[in-house]
Amino acid sequence: MILACDGGYHMPLATALRSIAESNPYLSDHPVFILCDHFPTHLRQEVEASQPSGTFAFHWLDIELSAFHELKSYEGYSKITYARLLIPEILPTQFERVLYLDTDVLVLGDLRPLMEADLGDKSTGAVTDDLDPLRASGRAPELTHMDVARYFNSGVLLMDLRRWRERRIAERALEYLRVHSDARFPDQDALNVACDGDWLALPALANYQGHRRQDLGQLDSETRPIVAHFVTGEKPWIPAKLNPNFGFYNSFRNRTRFSRTVREMAADFMEIQYHRWRNRFRRIAIRVQ
Image 1: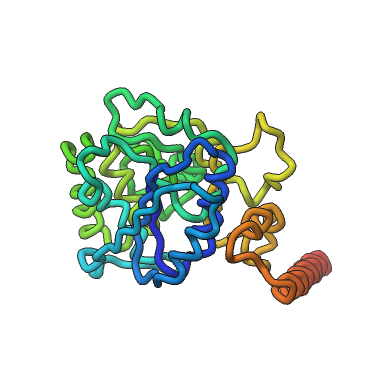
Image 2: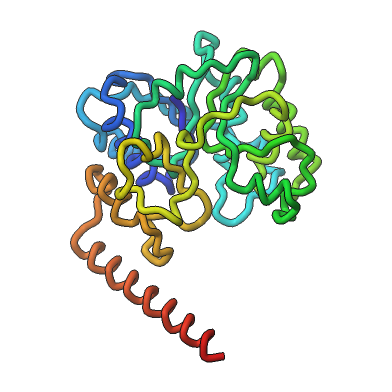
């Protein structure tokens, strides 16, 4: 298993790993690789200490990002998002496949069916992005320039590393980025082009993107996602976003070393109330007009 983030995402990383450990206790001593940039030692120690005893064998890999300095980075995106393109080069050749996860996830189910999925002759397993129907119909103009059969989300990737190396997927993705420096979702767009026709569609619950519509805590075991992915800027740990999963997410966060203090919880409550009332007044003002 492999994740990537810089020091600014230490809390989501610890929370994601905590959710993995609790949902998959059989992963005791499982190797976990963290591709990182500007990640202080004391925060690495806190991330590790946030996990149940005996869980995971951590491997922190400091990434040289100079190859990506020429590439555009939109607000809210860190250059570390490009690190997934380096995975086939960085990991030892004895690793034939790896499950990559973004750090803005909660793992709520058994990862074994996902990790052991039969890819056939495909290099990659991924889940279709929620934007794909809009792209196909022309209602997502930032994606209509992409000539791909389907569009996947790159936050959960099952990677056959041998095929990635043989088919030069990372290299072809970088070539695309150098030409299309204005790509709206840079690494994701590039991987979709490089893997067009070469990826297997995994079940939607392996990368569930509907967190803004559904309180995940209300779902039963049959409908709960394996991996809940908090796409877009409406992250559940940001009170002002009024994400319905604010409380659910914090139930995991509060079992890490980055749990909220009483003062922080009070401040969060006040901010949530403020934004709720502001939204109500806006709706009233629109109706009055």
